[in-house]
Image (cartoon, rainbow, N blue to C red):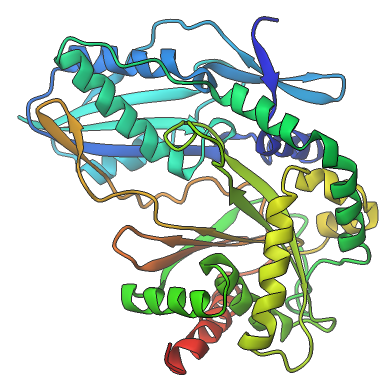
Length: 430
């Protein structure tokens, strides 16, 4: 079989979910992409060699998933030379090219798990794009891949070789799984207890799934907080000894609980965990899907609910090595209701700012990441609130919803109720 490593928690979750809903978690809609505009002199032959170096150096970009004895392994394939697809970009904008490239999916079953593009807009003006499957990357890794490509190109220009990576993503997964091996049963018991009696959130009594309609996702983008307001929310979080994620989820829980008869908020989320030396600049899916369940008491306020949310978030973060799909499998009644209910499991995510606005050196040229209007992967999601903190400080959101379950007006109404709750601690002055 060649070199193999255990599947990460995220990879296991996607593969296991795909067994229940074929194509829902590994299909072409799970493609992720990043593009950068390079200004200055660019040697396309050396850039092509640097792209080949990128794939050769990162095993995860040459890895497919295999099922063995009911589990999953990462199988690393030997490196074969790869080349950038070169296109004529005259007459197009950088954003148009980036979005066009992102629409062509990367297969999840054949190496390499990346596709690279380059186009010339004008003399000294190029766009380079990298497209990957979500099985092998995460949001931070997209920016890291561009930065690494810049370092490799610069090394080629200067006639030197970049040092080899300290270790590979598969090694990280193996080490991390070994570090929690002695607590797995205790952590499974925690999830069994926490999820007992849980039910999907019934966000509206009128929701009914249109089973005759093919699955399709609607989405919209909206600014949640400007930079000053987002900074004020961070101050509120620090004052109440919690995190920005937990503070935002406190507002979400207060808003959604008002719609629920049982006031029991249940969502799926993801945590990024680059908690080992050498992982800060490593490409790979360093995210762990987890479940959050928060019972919201009648009359709860921001101050009274924030400690409970903080503790639930911390508990989930520390036990995210138990795959969420396994947790749901412990309670088949919950899993069945989620699968059958409209917008069965809402997803709440927060992606903090992790990318510098500083240009990336490409030899004597420099590159800046191109904003994309494409939404990125959605999976088989009933309702997703994906919050993102930009490098300039604003908090924006992309809301995705299953059009079989709910229409855009209701999705916007739900989001506006959440946004109104966020305004409460800000209005009080932080």
